[in-house]
Length: 578
Image 1 (cartoon, rainbow, N blue to C red):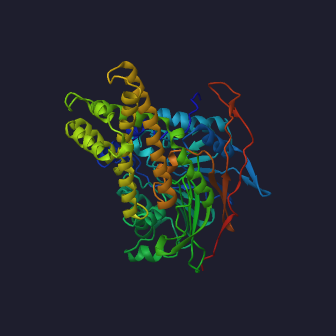
Image 2: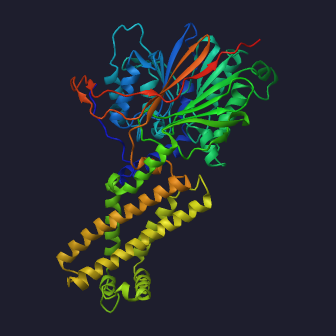
Image 3: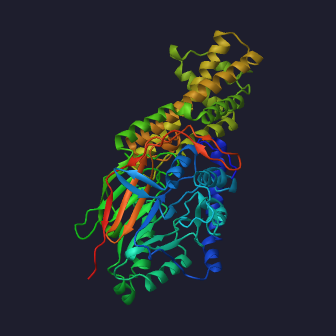
């Protein structure tokens, strides 16, 4: 299919921020009144699972957070499409099933975005092969970005039995259950829409748990967010409580004697998720039985999230302590990459110009003549801050904004916007608030200092008239460039301090530089011995893809893809239940 290669989403483009914010609000407000999951259940009365249990061995691929920039998305799609990958001398065949674990597209789920950022690259990497007897299936869990249109385009893409390149879509709802060989199950839940689990979805999984699970059943749970990590960041976060509710009350039948007695030996072997765009594995420390693995594998194509902010120990499923075993990238690499926020003006030119023109507009509002026929700029040009006239400077500012309600409003808007931006949901909240307040004040100080500086230089030192076209053009250029650059530098310093020292703003401080590297996905086999999980990592994606096909049937070639195991394979032994 014909599509457009897209760069990584620039999250600090003011237009993009505004558009995404509107989508978020609309999906939150209207989604609560018209839950598409309830409509899915009404149209699909049958509670069915997808049965792969007849196979002696099944291979499954899991990838999440994938429809962003072309280079990382296509690099991983090309790996997933290969017949097999060879890692440390072992041949790992392509998954019989591909599971997309959430956020299949960025920034918002318009059809054109799905086509350009997801379908196009995946179809080009693995075009449909007619009458292919080994054609793999694909299932998808929606993430918050898929929900921004109420799942409209997600459902069209994944629930209508359409081809997805040479993958075949199978599901009829946004959640599903797969019966795997040797009493293993994949249970994939849809917890979006304020992390709520709708009643039809509860009924769907309760029926499967009551009728089809047995005392030997082992579960791999797929969800679209690492709620155990979010709980460790913010004790008030309720998403993990809802995950625990699903496990205890839906899968294990807590509170219903017969149901609970029947399912008491069911085990959650692993929970797979994305949403954080890195690899992180927590393992339970309970010495009884096989440990439970909590794995975040959100490296399918979107910008990289830091790993150094993760806690070494957290409270996981059933209240058990889980220990952080492996991250990708390493914590030291994560810190080093976070320092790229010091180059914020380079990565976010749109924000630089936004700050610059905002300062120009505020300066213009302040130019009404209120001081015996003189404007604030003209009065400021008479001051020399280096000769002890700071008190006069602050007096002029107070007088200026007191006579210009519009300028006062713009000052408050700038300060409040910066402070509201502060991340107060993780880390030491008091320090976060203080950092946010200082950040806001520095932007105001920067504006008024530059207003004085350029007034003093242009009017006093260069002798230009305030209304001369040359002065107006010069001042505008000075304020846009110098004001924008310094404001952007301040913003970058704040993000760097926040993510490195306070360990917050993990999304804001990583979406700024949009790092394409450190991508990952999981490939695992299910057989009579148990499950073996192979976490596949790509430090650097290929960036020189060239179309060697046609516009209608593109096929891309580029450099070699260097991939390796992130860590040793993770073995989940198939214990026999007596």
